[in-house]
Length: 506
Image (tube, rainbow, N blue to C red):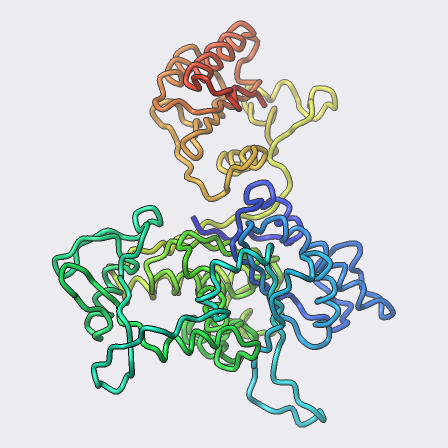
C-alpha cells in the first residue's frame, strides 16, 4: 500500500524506523531552504533560530533527519536532496559525514527557472541536487542504465523512418513472474510482460513493439541510448522548471494551491535511474509538500507496469491566511498533497481504464497514545461506578477508535509495516481484527470460552493474539486457559521453528 503520514517528520521517521528500517530504495526530499527566518515551522528545540547561529541551527535540523533517513535506506538505497546555493556546501559536508564521502555520487545542477531577477548581479536559475548512495557498490548493477558504462553496440536495424538505428530488446525479460510483471496474452503470445496491457498496445500502435516468430520485442533506438547516457551528467536542464510545475499542478487541481512544487520530470529522472530494474521499489519523501513524488511514482508505474510504492510525510503546516490555497479551501499543505494524489490517480484511471496500477493510499497522523498503559486504579483517574457503562475508559483514552488502537499496537511490533491489510472478523465478534493476516487484536469488552474456541479454529492461525486484560473480568482461570491453549497451538504450528510471538494482554 501507498500512504501519507501527517506530522512532524522527525517523529514520523522514528516511527518509520520501526516498520521500514533498511527497506526504502529511494528517498527524495526538497527541504525548506535556510532563509534565516525566525518563523521556522518545525519545532525542534535545537532549531530555534538565532541570527548568529542560523547555519548551524538549520544544519542541526537537517542532520537529525538525515541520520534517520540513512537507517531507513536499503543496502541498494539512494537519496536525492534539492537545495539552493545558500547551504549546498554546508549540507554536502553534513551528508559526507553521515553517508560517507565515498558514497557521494554527484552534485547535480538542476535548472529550475528561466526568468531573470533584475535586482541581482548574477541571477540564480538553478538548484543543487545532492545524490548519495547507502553503499556506492550498489550502483554497479545499474552502471549501463545510468550512463557510467553505456552499451552503444548492436544498433544494426533501421526502418528508414527517420528515427535512426535501433536494436530489438525482449519485452518479457528474465524473472518476470518473480518481479511481479503482469501476465497476459498479446498478439497470441503469452508472457510476463514489462508493461501493462494498455501500455503494450500503445507502444504496438506506435510501432515500438513488434512480433518476431513467437516472441515480442521492443525497438530500442540508439538516440534513446545516447539520451540515457546523458542522465549521468551533472547538469540537468531538461527536467522541468518550477514555473511549469506550478502551471501543471494548477491544471490538475483546477486552481492555484502550491507556489513551488517540484517538476514531475525531475523525480521521474531519478526513478528511471534507480528503480528501472526494481518494480517493487519503495520511495520515500519526508518533505512531501504537494506530493509531486507520489504523482511521479504512479506515472512511472503506469508506463512500465510497475508496482512501486510511495510514502509521503508532511507536517500539517497551515496555508497562509490570504493565500490562494486557503481561498480554495485548503487549510494546510497535507490537504493539498492528498487531493493531488487523488486527482492524479483518477486522471490515470480515466485515461487508462485497463491499467493495472495501484492508485490507492492510506493516511496516518502522528498523535498521542490511544492506550492507557499505566494502572489507572493507582492514579485514581477512573470512577469505578462508570466502568459498567463505559468499559473502554479502563484501557483507552476518551474518543479513541478501534482502528487507531490496532495501528498503535502494530507499531509496537517488530518489522510490521503500516501498509498491510486490516480485516474485521465480524463472524467472531464486533471488535476483533486481523492485521496482515497474522496478528489478531481482540478489543471485545468480554472474553468467553465460545469466543476463544472460534479464535482457536482460525486457519491459518495468527502468529500473535492480543487481548484486553480487563475483558477477562475476574475470571483468572479463563485467562490462563486462553493463554495456554493459544500458545500451544502457535507452538504446534511453528513445528521445529521457535515461535517468535505468542499471546499478549493490554
